[in-house]
Amino acid sequence: MTIAAKVARWAAVLPGGALSIALSATPAPAAAPTCRDLLVASPARTYTCAYTFDDGGEAALDFTFGPSADGSAAFTVAVQTLTGECACDSKGSAKRPAFFAAKTFSCVFRGGGSSFSVVRARVSGRAGDAIKQLSIWSGGDRAALGSCALK
Image 1 (tube, helix red, strand yellow):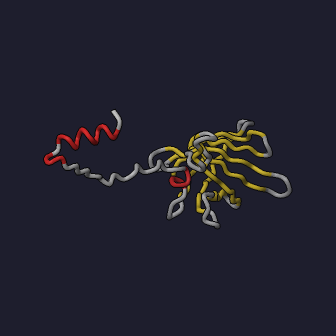
Image 2 (cartoon, one colour):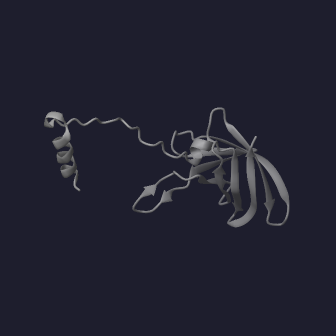
Image 3 (cartoon, helix red, strand yellow):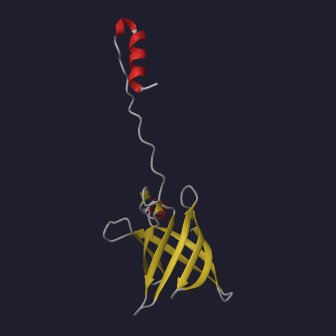
C-alpha cells in the first residue's frame, strides 16, 4: 500500500474526515564513539602498554593521548620523549565511507632522516579502558605486539 493510500484510508475513518498528523521529534541515534572519542579526553588519558618484541624481549611504556594542535580529526600520542601523529582508521566502502570513524587507529612516529615507526591498535571497552591488538612496526619490520590498560 502506498503512502497516499494509507493517508486516504486514515482520513476516511477520522471524525469529520479531518486528518491530523502528529509528528514527534525523535532524535537521531547517537553515532558510535570513534577511537578519538575514547582516547582523547580531558584530563589526558594514559595507558600502560606491555608488549613483546619479535626477538622475545619484553617492555612496558606509557602512551598518553591528546588532541592535535590544529583541532583536526587527528590526535597525538606521547611515549617517553617521542610524540606521534594518529588518526582513527576509516571504515565502510567507497560508496558509503565513514572517514575516521573506526575504533582502530594508526600512529606514525618520525625519526631522523627517513626512519619511522608505525603503531596500529584497537581501542576497546565501552569507555575506552583498554587497547588491544597493539602492533608496532619499526622501519617496516613488525617489531612488537601487545596490549594496553588505562592507567
